[in-house]
Each structure stands twice: as structure tokens, then as C-alpha cells.
Image 1 (cartoon, rainbow, N blue to C red):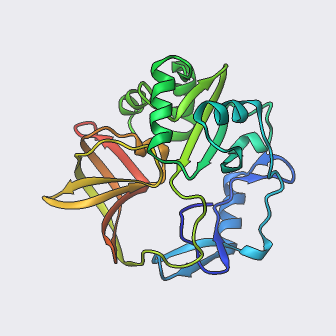
Image 2 (image 1 turned 180 degrees about the vertical axis):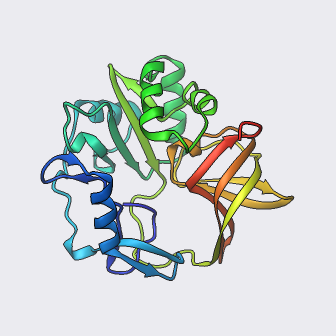
Image 3 (image 1 turned 30 degrees about the vertical axis):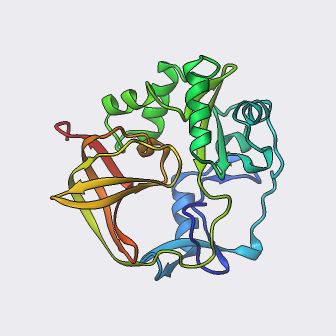
Length: 261
């Protein structure tokens, strides 16, 4: 599932795993399945893979791992607002980490994470794991130096009692099946942007940004880009002119340190 606003009666869903046969899908399978379910949604001005909402079910709802229970206690976060997702659902023994979504996260969640990491209760994932993640998932999205700098101070990629956990803290408890913020026009964008305010790991992360002297909003649903510190970057992505303002979205593009393009 992607985003927080979905076409009425439908769910935006990008396929990655076959949960019936418990395996990661091959690229050609994904492309074929995605194209067969794509249709136009004028609200976002995109063709999107859509699934009828009444056909959607969550066969692993209620999966609670020891790590999830521990994080629930440490973060003072309700287990009902936490969900295991990703490759762990396919094969817990082969998964290199556990992806956990936190619904309804806020600044108090961030403050607890900061305190737990600073006290050493939670530790950041090691260099070897970060390098493996980079070369299997993030090559082309961000340069290696920037990636390692982000992982050196991340609050979202942690080792919990020896288990590597990727956290996705979302500010919403649920999305909307309606058009919340209509895209009037979208276009490709490529250029240098400056992020001026503090990084926030709460998704979707929105930051003040400047490109060509114009102030815009930098928005991302990716943990990787949510933790970018203030600074100057080269961005390839999309610019969305919405009813609420102008947004730079790099989630289908890349972010590079200026001077390393």
C-alpha cells in the first residue's frame, strides 16, 4: 500500500511479495501484475495499480513478534497501532530484518526513540548490514556517502536485542478513500534544492525547501529521505502543483549530495 489518499472503493497497492507461496516476486511478474491492475486516478494525475477494497484482506493480521512487543513497551505505543510488514511475512527465517509500521506516531514517539538510542537501550544497525541494504535496495536512489551518513544517526534503522528493525512511523492511523489534496499538474524536476528545517522521521515527512529561489514543500514517504539533514542536495523526481501548494517528490527518483552527481 502506498500513500494516504486512495481512490474511493479502491486501494493503491504495489505488488512485491507472493504471500500465498511465500516468496518475493520476480520483476517481470511484478510488472505484469501491476500493469493488469493499473488505471487512471485524476486526483493524483497518475496511472496506479488499484485493487478493489472489498477484495482486500490481511491474512497475517495480528502477527506479533517478540521485537514488536518489546518496542511497544519501550515506546509506550499501543500494539494495535503497530504492524509487521515486508519480507518477514514471507519467510521470518530468511528475512534480514523486521519492518514495523507505527500508525499514529507523533513527536513524542520521536523523543522516545531519541532517548532510547542516546542511552544505548536501542542501537543503530551495524555497518555490514547497512552496506548490504544499500547494495540490495538503494543503489541509484542515494549516493553511498550520504547513505552511510544517514545510517550513522538514524532513528529508524535499529538493532533491537540483535534483531535489525526498520521502523516506518506514520502520522496517520488510517488513510482516506477520497481525494484529500488534488494534484492540478505534475512535471519532472531535476535540480539543486536546499532543505532548511530539521529532519523529521514521521511519514509522510514534509520539509521547507528552496529550488531556484522558490519555496516549496519537500515531501517523502521513504524513511531514507525523511532523515535528510538540512543542507543542499541534487534531486531528480517530480514536482506536484496541488491545491494546497507546490511539492517536490523524489520517491520515484533519487537524491544525491551536491557535487557528487
